[in-house]
Picture 1 (tube, rainbow, N blue to C red):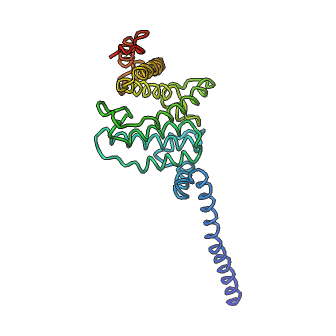
Picture 2 (tube, rainbow, N blue to C red):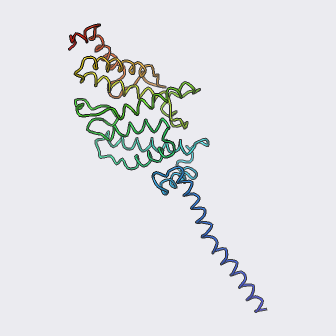
Picture 3 (cartoon, rainbow, N blue to C red):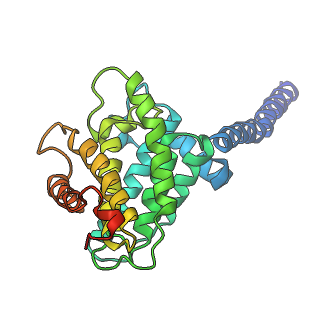
Amino acid sequence: MNHLAGRDAHSKHKKTFAKRKHWPIVASMSFAGLLTFGHAIGGIAGLIEGYKHTVEFFWPHPAEAHVTPASESPFTHILKDLRREFRVVKIKLEKAEKADFSALNDTFNVLKKLNDRNPSVWYYEAEIGRIEDAAHFDAEGCLVPGNFKMIDLKVSHTLFYQYLDTARVILQKMTGKNAGADSCYESESGVCQQRVAWVDHLLANDLYELGLHATDKDKAFGYFKRAADHVKLAKDYRPPSGPVGFAQCTDTLTLQAKVDAKLHEFQPGAVAAGKVN
């Protein structure tokens, strides 16, 4: 009996050891699978960054689980992460505190790796670039008054126009309500009426300033004319609540009045004759 009991105990020990021996292999394979999938959605930030976003998407923090819609995709999840990091930086800048852009840039790089042709990538690249340049832009991405010299707007303007060209086409095909800013984070297009109008508002402000500082009269008129086109589009935006347009930078209605006043200075033939001050 003791001999048989010993054999049974030895057999159970071997089975238990075998299970324990295979568990690290199974765990490693599972972890490697998660890292591989994480790399697919976040390669540019590294395997670990991608893994983190993968885990956050499939196993959100309990405090956030109730706000994660069932239809959310990895891309819209990263979009919302980017929005959150962008707000954190803006709040710091609004308080005149030093802002750490590392988390914001890391999250942006993950989004860019997922789809670098998505309109949201062009929009955020322009916006992040502007608020990083605190010498020339405020926390809202508006030009700082009186500090216009030695600034190149070509980079952000190229990205903004790239965004608008694609976003307007997408908006024409969209159905349903997509006016508010939240709509930009509910679909993978990253497009909504609010953001399109906001970009028009920023461009209108920039172009007005370019017109004021232009030494060539023809160029000045061109800037004011383009500003008028963009301010009209910004004014056409009707937010879910509040007045038309936007209050940031020079507000939309005030800007429209200023642009119109400048255009009235340019009478037919006055530019060519050099009569406009």
